[in-house]
Length: 568
Image 1 (tube, rainbow, N blue to C red):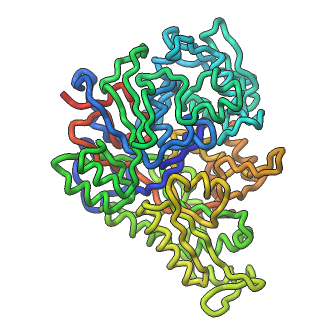
Image 2: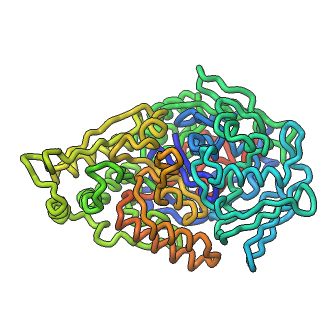
Image 3: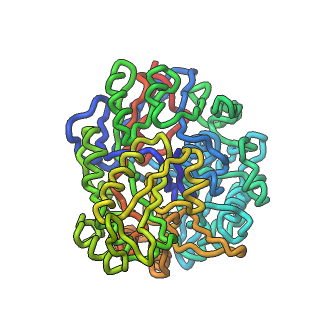
């Protein structure tokens, strides 16, 4: 089960772990101590369409059943949901393996025109063939209503993030219904990322109730190479079939069947032919199993914008003090965690010291300072200063013990291993960690989003737009009209006006070098506040059924669903 934030973000959460790896080109077994990944390389067995068979099906394992097929709605911002909806709905921009945005000729008649002075204005000319499955043309109004629903202006829309959309002033009709003119009130650097997400029709965005509930267990619209056929809650499957109304390249596969499979059961499912691939992540058992299936599968590797981290809930009384969070950061040996999780996968462990840029990004910089260095004695001293004194084997303050409710998804081996390592490390400074494994399907909705935890581990699945995509994770939460905290994706519930101002400045900076410089300033502030602790870069590491092509370790690239299939 994976979650990602919408809009320019495409940032996502993933439950399963992972590691950094090099693209291997053709897919094979691992070499000892592979170095971290190179940018712009993926491993999908790229094959020309004329060499791909017509027909067949792909059985795609999901970590969890999407509770809402609206990717912009808070419950729908799941990586698993993204994997489904990108086959069904329009994306006006796609991204290649190197993270470069490319305008999509299936939905656009020409490259969008950008004007930056005096205001930022983007003009989109839509493909005259583009239409929803019911025959309704895709027009400027669909973009307008995506903005209105996602901007955060109407609080009845339960969105996961307003990043970018909130900077738009208007979306208006151009020369005709097929031309949308988007005017920004604030300049927005990653404007291409806004529509590097599924575009939903105005018919389901006009009403907040339909936006919030109209995509639960059904898909009322589509306009992609595949279309929705059925959902079976008993079998836990979602079936898409080739869309006969699609105007682009005909899909090679007859159907894609998405099937919910527990992380620890995926290897058996792959070995038994019940699914056609598995994303290995940091699951050592799955990696070992994949290596025994050399006659059935290829190992495919790439480096993506994804990372594994510890989120700390700063709204909890014992964690509200920044000095306590800093002390806990010093007491956790991230190098040991990376070594434990990555070396069994025959990968070279590398600590990640940036919340925004990955180690293989040109803008990567170590902004952790002293907080990035394991220092047990200093951690103890800081806890003493914060008033948490040693009392026997534990630390207490005002009669209360310093205990951590560490929530993890059940049946995710990486989470179990990481939490147990952290439990042992914090015990060394007198902090008690109680690990609570909860059903994976309830992990976000019942625990993380409501804030019913002190610490947790999962992965953020990043994008080609690293600065803007991070804003909803670290933006200061505010209360809505009901007095409830709107966290968007800031599950740490920590924030500062200074960080918000820096994000606003960075997102308006169209010069990439300056944008990246501001991104690193933001990261240094995030480190100081200790929203979370990045542990290691999570790579693409996949075991893929032999013969399945144009599929696998995508790195930054968006999948091309109509090209997936089996080699002739």
